[in-house]
Length: 108
Image (cartoon, rainbow, N blue to C red; front, side, top):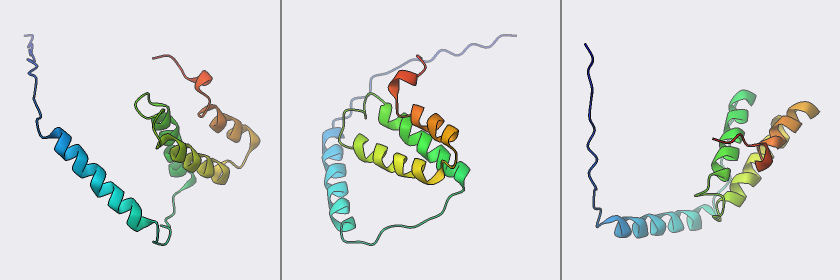
């Protein structure tokens, strides 16, 4: 027996979105201002987890909705700091470096 599901898409009108977006911007602007005077956050990761975080930053900062935004620059800076800390071998460093170079991306 074959079961088929049909999904009907409906347009959802979100009239409150611009208000929510403005509230989110205001919330994060306040947070960033508070964080300026706070001490750095310290935590530890395994090197494998740090590698995953670095790769995640590479992928995220390359995303078309992020790559031309102000947040992409600090994302790359953080990822490169992680790269400097974890790459203990020139070949591993070279592999990590390809993640920042869009010419190595695999077409989707």
